Image 1 (tube, rainbow, N blue to C red):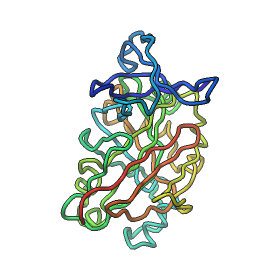
Image 2: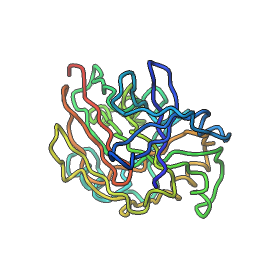
Image 3: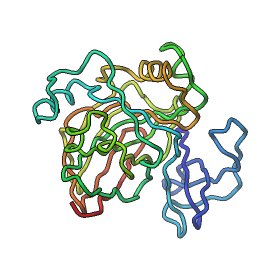
Length: 276
């Protein structure tokens, strides 16, 4: 059975739960936990179980990281897309990692709105696999990097493409409020084929084939990313790494429904609000 960890609110009070599939009706249920899965202590079920659509239940971002790091142009296909679309002078993916950061205030959860900020007219989606760190991580090697991973979740690395071209540091383009939807839950490290996790995206219910891909095509693999980032920054429990978007991204307008799906994890849905 896959181990899935969710963070949810019950009547506006945040809690944690295991997500389990009922053997009789096949539906997913939240099994409430006593304790915090990221603090290293023991967590035990409280005996309370809730349907995902029960009154007063709302899924939250599975973690609130102290920081988020991401890799840009970490798939050859996306690097070529950025060049062909006029967003980059470099046609091929760079040899060295291109690492950026997002603040904790950019993080939202499933079904939370993505707010179109003033000053931009070109918001883009970027579906990705996100890594969730389990413990203090500093100067780890590629060989032992996965020992520091709690699991994986879906992420939409929402980007303001017009501002990305104006700001060399990408601070506004990548770090605005609501730019980092995460969810719907964490699938633990040993319960996901993270070496070949299939990523897909739908916009307003329609598949976007050019936004799909697999982590098998990452230029810099997940252990490499963890080792490289931990060489200059201490990662804390709950911190998140965005591994890269696999292919072409695309435009988002107010009212659009964006759904990131990772095979073996689930789907993350958000709707864009605000006026361009």
